[in-house]
Length: 317
Length: 262
Image 1 (cartoon, chains in turn yellow, cyan):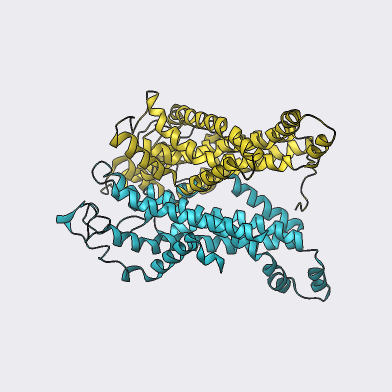
Image 2: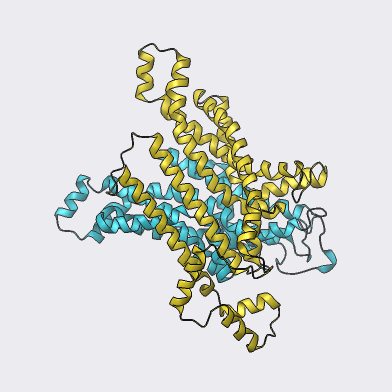
């Protein structure tokens, strides 16, 4: 177990090191030389003298050999200095910490609401397998995974904000602003989550130890609450925590549509505006979040599910 | 041929005909602008109305089938081929190769593919070729995983062991004995993956990072339509319905194929 822990931590560090290297390469992937890009972004004109470009290159250390630049990038990352935005000149780190709470609000609320609806519904569908509830959830799942979230958002804006002007369509501030983005995020995930919950419960219902418990004459409701529900919680909780990562990904589209000032919107704006220092910072920030979250999920899984053997590598089927 | 009776299969066939036939089915030229008839609502001449430059929406939608479906399909084919090759090598040979390949797969799977694609598009620039590249870069992993587990299940079957004992080369065994046995589940996953790929590529175009004007693409047309949602909502509604129906059809077909296997 300790071996697994160490290997898991090393793996996480390796991924992070890879991300730092990749973000360094990002500027070099782009067409044209970095100093010109910075100059263009700062001044927004094509008519920039070579002198300005030269000065910018000097200031940003772009004349150093590539390995020195790489080491400098590492040093800055470790000191938490992600540079300044090419657009607004504000420090990237400040911008991220200012915007992240908005994304977190949406993510946490949407996961909470989804779970509150999907878990009881999924368990209900599993218990009444093949009946009306089951078939309805199946249909809801099929339809909701097929509707792109941006389309859902547009239809909702059209119906609730344009036609009937019930809710504000853009921005954030009041509680009413939360409704539309949350509606989109919850609808997009609810069908899928319900199916996962119901599939997990169905598996458990048909397992041998439940049959054995029935044979021993344990009352049905006790079997349900103690034997089934307790064991179903492990995969369900794992899935819900993984949804946090999906929420991060989903935030890009939803925040862009509803002009929600979180990091997803920031991402879209930076990519569209070719604000490369901002992109670097955001990618690093998200990578740390994702790696950390995966680590927590794995540790949680290991902790709660001690039946699993972590004998490392080998060709597991 | 019970599949042919399903409405979603017929719909997909229709889409394929439109993708191949494309422009010859369009009643008007999808690129021809009529500035005097801009944003006109659906009528007999323009079945789905016209956009802000007076281009026929119906013709543009028909023409866009080739672009949007073709893009998703080409990414999917690349992912399937790459993933299958990597998964077969990994599962069949095992050992160090397996370890390295699967570590790499795990690492890529841990990344949010849409954000990676977005950042790379930002660096490389928009366009069809770049779109295919950035989505293929992260998309192959699920096929590699599935292939690997399928290969591990059958690599010690009698017929494979016998083939190995008769001294056949590994490449020959993989191609002639293993590939045919695993192709079915891969097709199922591929069909389900097609829906997902359409969603991802159209989202990218929706954000203005994928296929851009004047080429008609579902996501780009929808994003364009949202600008006029107060005056001409049909511009956003029709492409959206088309995306939903297409993705739903692919998903239903995938589920159907998956059920048949059992």
